Length: 397
Image (tube, rainbow, N blue to C red; front, side, top):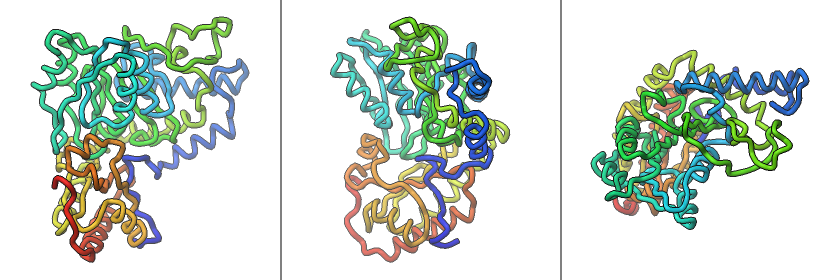
């Protein structure tokens, strides 16, 4: 390995390295189909629709979705799916409970909804990414004004910690609240069973653990949970009506679907299911622990992520002698190690860690990561940190 042969450790941002099957599926779609799903009755459009249907069924199997696969609607990514869910569910007077670990994909739409009369309660977090179940129960009950919705980040995108979704969902259901799970970081990395976990709405992206292309993702809503449309347009059917169709998926799928992207997502989901999420998670967890212990031995480096094996393959650090952006830049230029520095679109989480001013450096492991890459990255951090002059510690450390 050398600086000219990059070591990609930014899978939490996107799976920039994808199985050949995914790349081939996108190319095959563009070469052999090319049509838009649901927009005509000719053979190419029909075949495009079959690809979309097969992808819905594969995702339904992966997440153990009950009933009609059409209740899973395709969206552009997890951010889009979360916006559709939040804006389509919450009304003036509703109260939503969320956590301090939320991505801006939750924090910002909720903030916008507060101008429309929606109220929020934010659960206090902890530096290790855990949540107090007693606090959650009190927040959901709300002194006789129970919450309408609980939003849970399944896997923390800064620390990699997984929250106890089933336990939190049970508390929410006890007071009649719905449960929306942000699975951006967990889909494909952690087992997800919406029935066993008590999930009412699941938002996910296609381009991370599911190994699909950017521009793919989805929102599933269980039977009986009605999400209003947040954007409007053609659906290929019911064209004479001025209103969006009542039935899913059309109600939440205005506009042309991303046929090539969905073909790639289908291939990614099939690749993941063939190998098994538990097996992929076990492999990534071993690599995560290998990286965690190697980084934890380096003077001047604070490992912020706990070494919890039940989370996802994220290890985030702060350096005493340089800011996060400098460390990430030097890792790229001097060692070819590609990581993500900054606040990771989760400023409340960084405030808990004391890195709200400085940011931190996130290493994230994926399906193609090797032991040699992990060792190379840790050695590069040791070399660069050892050559740096000591400076002020990150705020709050």
